[in-house]
Length: 178
Image (cartoon, rainbow, N blue to C red; front, side, top):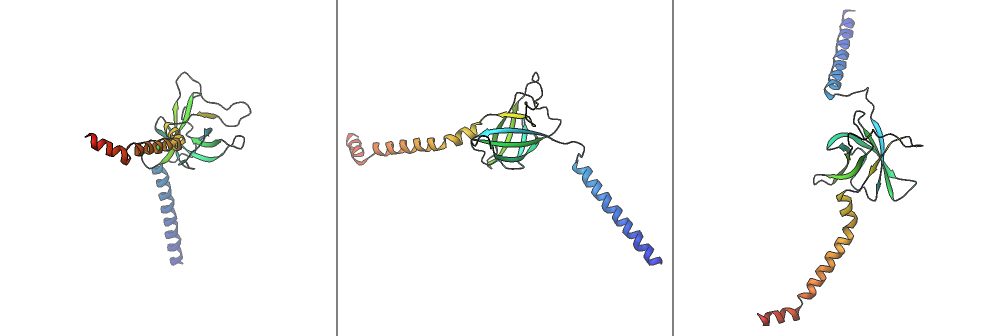
């Protein structure tokens, strides 16, 4: 009987130790079970290359949430619908604007929330909408990517003109002039 009692005592100690370790890990991680994030929608025109589920959402550079879902807007195929979860204590104002930005040179995209004046009220859902919608505008990155084929075409045209300028006949004329 004595052997069985020590097994129960050791088992109870081990389970208590595991529970304490889980509790300490949660405490160190700072997990807040009582705060549910607020969800917002934003509709981006064009391409959202580099943005993925789990990408960060930043408000004035401060990480405040993450991208929860990305899909083509079923009502307008030219827009991309992005669902974001933002910390409940983040003051998203009615004049806040969402933009796509790149993180460093890695090419990983994130949603940057800017604007939001003190005088503006908090963003609330519009009529017949369940979630508030943050307006978006194209960033410099998006405008460059959109115009990239046009820029490459102009560079090619300039290179062709430059090659025609320095053909053999013109080079011979230039050599005789010098």
